[in-house]
Structure formats: structure tokens, C-alpha cells
Length: 125
Image (cartoon, rainbow, N blue to C red; front, side, top):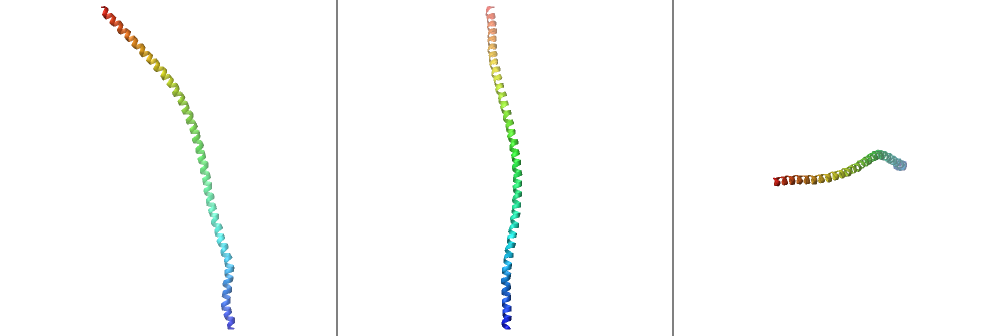
């Protein structure tokens, strides 16, 4: 009986430990894998949120770029119109300066004639 008791006390715990290990190990591995899958799902959800936010930001920036391009086109059109007007004003200014110089020459001629007439009158008296 003693051998039976020794075997019972020794073998039963060893068999239980081996059985527990063999049954528990796959269960533990399954729990680890389930946790990994759950964590991966959380990471995927998080990155999906980032991707959605980024997509909205890209759409917003695309709209801003389109508005800026339209503003740039309008500003360029205004610049071209201003350049054309400036060129026309420059031509008018040049014409007026030419006329001004001609009038200055005429004025000098008139003044010279007046002084010449006055000098001739003064010398004839």
C-alpha cells in the first residue's frame, strides 16, 4: 500500500501538472492571440480615424488651393489691366510733356518778341 500511496502522492500531482500544462498552454496561447487581435483592431480603428481626418484635411486644403488659384488668376487679370492702363497713361503723359515743352518754347518766343519789341521801342524814342 505504501507504494500505491507514494505513487498516488507523486504520480497524481505530476500527471495533473502535465495535463494542466498541456491543456493550459493552448488556452494561454489562445488568450494571448485574442489579446493581440483585439489590440490590432484598436490600432486599425485608430489609424482609420487618422486616415479619415487626413482625407478631410486634404479635401479642405484642395478647396483652399482652388480658391487661391482663382484669386491668383483674378489678381493676374487685374495686374494685366493695370499694366495696360499704366501704358496708356504713360503715352498720354508723354504727349502732354511734349505739348508742354512745345508751349514752353512758344512762351519763350513770345517773351523774346515782347522784350525785343519793347527794346526797339525804347531805342527809337
